[in-house]
Length: 65
Image (cartoon, rainbow, N blue to C red):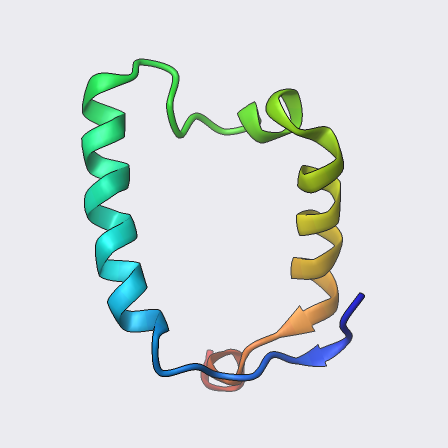
């Protein structure tokens, strides 16, 4: 498990644009897609890992909030 600041990457803006397009398309087609709390039902181990990871790490952008 990582603690502290996450390392920035140059690929994230590109992949984020692709992901947003895919997410919008899936949300239009699949009725239950993207609803809050469904990650815990689908894959509880990954959902718990992500929750801990997001609480223990931070980004450089968090300094400017």
